[in-house]
Image (cartoon, rainbow, N blue to C red; front, side, top):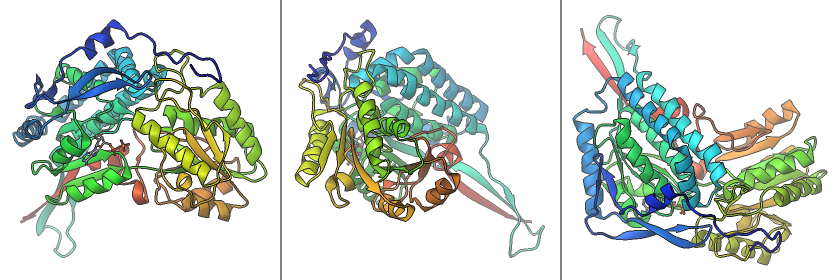
Length: 504
Ligand code: ADP
């Protein structure tokens, strides 16, 4: 029971479809077939809203990964996908998007059960974004190409030069647990549009929707071996996949720590690597902003998905003149909206954290902040329940050296600080090893653009936070990543350029 509000934290009943899916035998999806693992080891699946074990997935062995990579390799090398007419590839990718849309209710429920996010949020956010990424990238299938170029050191007519864009090959795609299906589709879509084949590994905490996606892959008409889905632990299955000599590119979304390890592990065979890593994104509120309105938005920027968002607005900088009013606005929004509830509760806007490990990490940070001298403006505790719920939390009286200010907490915890002028806040906002996102709240256009130019991050939002679009490149500065996903740059990350020079 959530004592503060007397809200029941008892998880609601699963649908018959979800129950049947959970009862399926744990298998891997390789070469368009459901196959058994070589060693039969499994990882338990837990519902974070109740902390109950609800099923099992395969913990893939090295032999399983070898098999999946071999299927992807064969499908790439014989050109069954890259050699297909682009309009046909586009149609098949769009068919997958249609099938996701047709199965949205079931996928949203599975996502809620597995990750802990509210079903309504999965249905309104994750699933449409997954569909949108596929449809947007499907359109690129027939729109990438090279160019005819004039040489510099040779007279015109002496040679004929052109470039072609070719797929990079077999991709290992490693996905985190915070937006499982959406992230899977964000990875799949550009690879497929570019003509690559792939082995995708969802996070061990949240593999259900990606496994359900595999059924739809077969139904959509992808040739065998184009999309292979393996489940298992990161440190074994993921590690082996990243090091596999037959993999040409690794695309990873996850923690900065594992991103660095993956970069090192991919070096042996010089794989292409794109990394989308952690963040500590500032929310900057200028003195002219409406504090109540921005307080509500700042609450959304950190509490959505229980703060388990790489672009969460986890550092709030509000001008001294309106600081207290912004915090008050956040507190009101937290009490009205961001009260933890079980993921299948129709009223839920914020669910539990994904796992006990994540709960311990987040509550550990709150404790470390307190010990270092931070004060809790509101929250700071967890409701008494079996699930991994943490109340929305704002920490004040923080200083720049505290771990709660410097490190990514990945929970519903924001550190709030005052500032005096634009130089002061630009310096503080950039005082981090991360550079993923930042938002600026002001009606003064001059200030908006001056500050946007000074913020060192891959995305800067004005009067909004965490807005993403399939057409707009997304990625990190500094230790928040390498490369861009989405937009034209997203597909370019799966292409390589061949230059052809013909002497005439
Ligand atoms: P978090 O710390 O938030 O759980 P991780 O970065 O550990 O996130 O995990 C993100 C993804 O990376 C998951 O799919 C996980 O299985 C995978 N992973 C974790 N460790 C490794 C590794 N050493 N090599 C490859 N993949 C890994």
